[in-house]
Length: 577
Image (cartoon, rainbow, N blue to C red):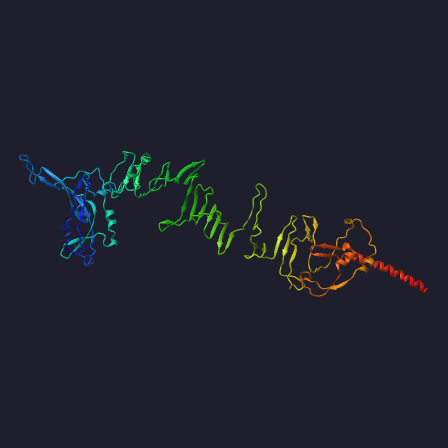
């Protein structure tokens, strides 16, 4: 428009309205809003100065009006003074500003009272509710020479006032922070209806955005043209072609809340919520897909950039495992958790179990109580296997870096035994006469247990003990006659001893010497075997010799020598006599 920069023309587009008295206001053609109506708006340097003045937003109302169109016919004039007309034309006029402040909106008449429409009931009963829509059906019909005003809000205009009392219209959306479009939409009231029942004439009621093409894709008018689905679409009583907001409870009576695609199709993957009864239980059922087709899953998580950051995912469809993922949308197991910890806690919060990942370690922890690993006995005893395969790693107790299949970092390992023997294996950092030479201990915590047995359960036989040196206060060998049979004397013991050869030697390997590099005294097992074979034992490690078994041979040899000495003494005594 000519004149100031940014000047625009404001037009009221054709439309129809009803005011609070039920009078129609019809706009049949685009009607300009005269700038003269805003003449006299005070100039404000902060709002109206500068190259692109901001101005201010002012509300615009539409009010019912009447104009005379024709005088009365001859002979029908009234004797009353004043103008007389046989025809009255209904029209409208613009109002600017707040009608309640300017006194333009009339009060309603109820008997002798004239309250504001919204407070009509409160004028008679202070506890009554207000009437936000100003609907007062029991008021008196207004009367008077001039029709009363009940303005209809139609929007806002932006007005830039000049110092001389004139001004011009400017674009409403400048500046953006005024949020003109939202304020206009909240201010304007489109025609509605007050009713109890709406009958769908052809099976469906469609709520459609006026400015959109009804034949656009995914819209009712487009979809209903499909002969295959027409009847099904008509069974859906109400179509909302846009967003739907419910300020209150949304109730579904005996049906499902189905989630379909843009054309209202499930595409072989039903997704719905349903209330159902199963036995004694009332359930909320969530359907994701079908059992005969693959596809469909339930994903829960926060929105991020128009998508979902999956925190919980439940597999559906044909997947028989029903995989559940927490922190992942692609679970690889029945329960797949991507996170640092999983916690199981009782209702009293006195016991809890945690499974977690800390750095490179996986932990099973019970911070508030004992941790029990138990395999139930139903159907027979079951086992707890730890790293059962040969290629598996080690198990550590008291250490996070086990060096063997079972590595215990502690003083003792305790085994109670079937008879309460309370055996232990370990060490207490004390050993030797001076206590400065720690040793490995095998013993019992039971004071009544005094024996240690090396026994092969499978063969039922005692076992050999292989070691370097044996330190003991005494060595007792079992020798009860009740345990022996085929007892016989040792013959030619002295001759056998005389055939034995004592030697000194060094062991060839350190494993045999036990670290002792000095010379040792002993016999050669192969030589002993030629004389006393029962004293020699053969094993995969070579021949071994029972030196203790030589004692009875030596005893008999000494006895033989004693007899010979006695005979010599007797012979020498006879010669002397």
